[in-house]
Image (cartoon, rainbow, N blue to C red):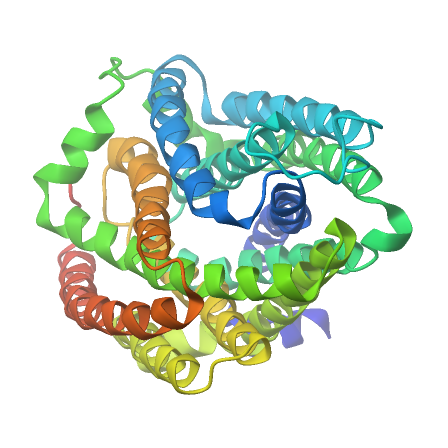
Length: 434
């Protein structure tokens, strides 16, 4: 019965593939579930300790920090096997979240102190640390996965992984919706325990599927290529530049709308717990939509309409969403718009992004991809934050931000067509980008 349901939803997965992708789905459940738990908390903590006017600058600080973190990460890629790197990062972030839980609960340093000030380090450290976690843990996981997948298996199995991730994100968001009852400090402690489950799940995967690590070990034996090798690879291939555009441009549009929503939410709710609960509600709606789409739609759309169609369909949909938010400006319209943008991103665009890397070399998968997902993604968000800083009045931000967003989407559609057609040709020819 279970096999029949899985085949109906995700295609003709073998029993072995179902077990393998099921385990990877469990790993991603904890990664994304943790991220959506702390993601909602970071905004609440920052808004109520530092203040909303500095939120765009926090995004820029996280971008600068991430540049140095990515350079260190690139060095570690040469020194460690990818599974060991996941162990290391998971443990470090588990300890970090545990420390944040202590300081958030502190009577003078923490949220009990209701005075907002730009010099309150707790807000900055919470925001920047969680931003780094979301970036590093996600792309090291996908790099680990894509190193042992072929295109045919990936198209069938990636939606299974996404479904697990969305289940985790819904659960994490539901927990945040109880912030007034549980407390933000305890929620951060739960996040610490959750991210520490990741190395346990990876170890279980390796034990049961040791053959999938052969490729990783071959990559680890290669001569180190330097911290900036990923950036060099990224800028040397038109296909990779296309991937960069498709993978990041939506972040500019999303950040502009996201700041609008957060500013209005901060005005509407007067405590960190209530802001966190609103962001948790946003997370439940977003990830509930993504989960529904991942279960019944992602694999079907990719198999039925093709990879290129799915790449192009997302920006066209977002153009409609931006137009609606422009025409009808309120907190709840912005909430609905952001739910659509983020939900379809996780359910449709993200699986397509990962499939784009299948016909590429291992250096590209691990090094160039880290720059796309890390530096490229955060640069896009920083660009969106710059637009917000330039138009601090919400009404101006909505008007000019919408015009800028629609122009970006036009370029995005063109790049999606280029990447989709190039990917199709590479797969048909059996070629890879090196």
